[in-house]
Length: 109
Length: 503
Image (cartoon, chains in turn purple, cyan):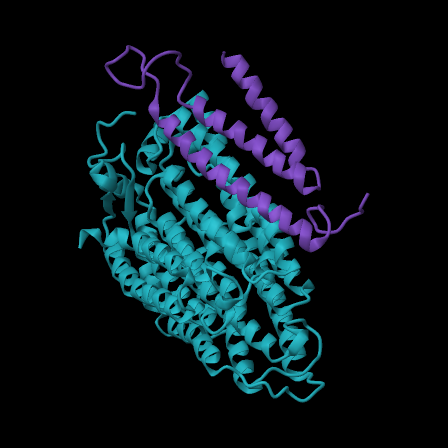
């Protein structure tokens, strides 16, 4: 399971970074989203992977760590708000700059 | 009085919420509420500054959860200085905005208050994940403030700023995941203890986390490869927003100062001073390129924005010297450069108001209104920022140079600091002579707003005070530096007795 998660986080990060480096706003927003997913997964596994154990000390011998779950929840909420904001901003830039290039100009196909 | 510590976070929060509820009410009511809150914040933060300088660090456990399990606010000298600086800067910026800039879009005052809340929270928190949360609060408010007023220049600069900072936030979370996964704690004092004991693989992971954090804070502070967003963003922002943003890059400097003195400082065992081999050359290069960039600027506000980058380079070079004397000088220079830059952003707006559609572009045109008055203010601000005697910039630079004797490897710093000051001198005198001495037309008859001028006077007056009482401020800086270079006392204040604790 560790390998699967590591590969998943790596793939998400690589795809996110690739998309971020595109010069159009839509891929950039997609890239930010994927990078956000990768980061959330990474935060989640920072408490170590434990299967089927409650996050209560005493209820099991090897309880799962509740703190990363709380951190991930915070990160998801913040990330979601930020992505919503950047989508609106990208739409506004498309309207005002008449281009979806991140620099507001660039060749139009 | 123990609850005084949390007021700089709660007061802007509740004011901001109230302003949102008043969004449909009259504009003058919103102005009064916002200005009142910003005014009350000044004495509160000054009282906190005095408490913080007294030392030892005061700890406020939120909800009564004892550290390291709960989130704590910690007030020490550095936090006090940053809080007071922010409040003192915010009031003139807000008053200036009330003369018309706030009417160019909805919810300016609410965003301004949330920005203050994020800044104050970031300075006070003693938990590194909480630092991330407050960074996000101040960032999302700054996105709104930067775009305030609209226009394609702001949209373009805003898009870059937002995307870059979102990437920065992702990196911040990655670093926090590494820290928590390795050290098992997020409380900064507890983290410092865990880092001291780290060795082997753990030390390698922690080193990676420390350097990823340096990238994040470097982006906020506008350090060398990460500053390209700043000139466009700051020169596109409306003047009061740019003046408030003068303290935003200093949040990055604050975070670097805090994390790399408390967690990865001299006592951090294998990871002692992990950031300094990177920070020193990069800060020096930032200093030089900021000065060169100022020569290329086509607008007065862009010139000032480049000088922000130069001041960040100067400050971080001082930080990477990592001695108490250098840190004391850094504190003084930080206060000075924030006030000087904010004053020049407001003055640039005064100049632009009298020049019609030429704005603050550096081309000959009609002279600004009240040429003598605005010109005199500009001269004062420029002299302070360049570092000419007798103003505060000179005192700050001398203190920094004394802290870095050339015999101890400070030679490069001396050369670059003086060269940067020279570039700033050229850029600002060229800008000033173009704007004030080459009038091609009669000044327009549009009257000058006397209140704008009056509010702009506050910041240069503060700089003069900073020069006159330089000794007092420098001594306060020494106390702050002494606290920062003795992290054990901070840790003891947060965790109780530092002995016998294992992770």
